[in-house]
Image 1: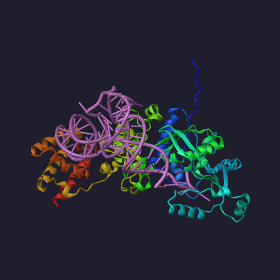
Image 2: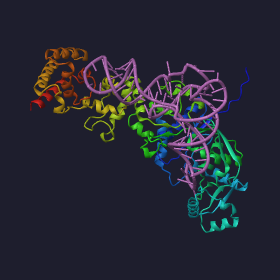
Image 3: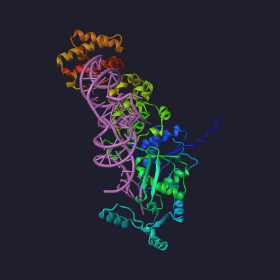
Image 4: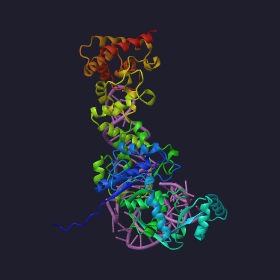
Length: 498
RNA sequence: GGCCCCAUCGUCCAGCGGCCUAGGACAUCACCCUUUCAAGGUGGAGACACGGGUUCGAGUCCCGUUGGGGCUACCA
């Protein structure tokens, strides 16, 4: 046996904060996390970063898990599991952070500060007025133990700040961009433990990533500027840093970071609008990564197989809803009839107000009928939500076509009525009600009436479906059946003759 | 303002010094197919931000300019 290098177990985490429903940009990071962990046979860990109590929203915490689940991003460790690194919620790990912060104070890397928010604001204001960069001036470094305990007695808020070196250079290696360096004069004494006893992100994630053995921190590019702070903490705590993978941001149409302001939709909204999770996954992974050739349509396993960090791009990507829609169509068309019908059904079942079928249509929805319809609408769909509009006439008792739509521009009412009467006869006398057969006899009839096929089919289509845009006519008639087809054309004639 | 990151068609990507008169995809336009709408097919238009280097040779490496973005909280 060849000597095998011991390969380090890869541990990746997705660490969202429950302050809102995950949107596209946020979940794309989770996708990268997941893919990378899978590609390395590592662990995918979900950790909830709820250290900001004022912004905490329990509802969004649930939506985080719903989003991951829907996209098929299964996690190996997380709040719902009792893993070796439990608990996976920061508010339940407070003691780790307090301990670390106090340790830093003892070792002289941090200090208590009783500067009030008001004083801080005044400081920033003054700096701005003087054209100076707004930065904490380190005044707390000179507070004595006595000062602090006095303030504490007065009930003033006390924080712990990290004592950042004033000079020198800091450099770190980003797996996507290479070396990035900062001047330490840029970094002020930042807060690591807030006055409510909770840690800031900077402290909390460093402690947790270390405790949980995270090997790769995959996060958005917006974190690059605070990475030196994280390095400082690591050095002071004598912690070996993980590898950093800063992925490019996703932009909205206006080329700025995607956010709610763009109407950036949450993952769950895409679900509700009839997007397939595999399509969204595929589309999103292509925003900031490519396999190196022109392949675009790839399933999860292929993506996992081909994924490498060095193919993550350095530049931001604009989210293009149109391309997502196109890709969704590709995935819809690739589904088998029964599978597609199964996926469509829940959308139809929903109450009318939530985008489902009209409430006048009986539930449960007839799925055998749906399976018959699906082959004829498959290539007409961009989203599963499109289905309703396209096929509701199959399920309705009757339809009411618009008179002005019934009469083609190239015909008048009299000739339209004539054409419909002829159709009525054909339908009544048809022995074989198959699409193929119907098409034959209707084409023959058109010739007799001296009409172009399209000309003749149009009034029939509208009579029967109530719509201008519909699935192919003869398949529609076949599925609808003789009786309903007859009835609806009859009804259209009545309308025109009135 | 300061710091950091980024820079190929409108958009997403390919290109990692010669294979590039720059390739693919979405969108767009034209045509074909056609019973509506789609889907599909064929073709067209469309980009290396700019200026300096390095090199026999630069979209590809370096520097600068410009432009865009991010960060600059007791938010993450």
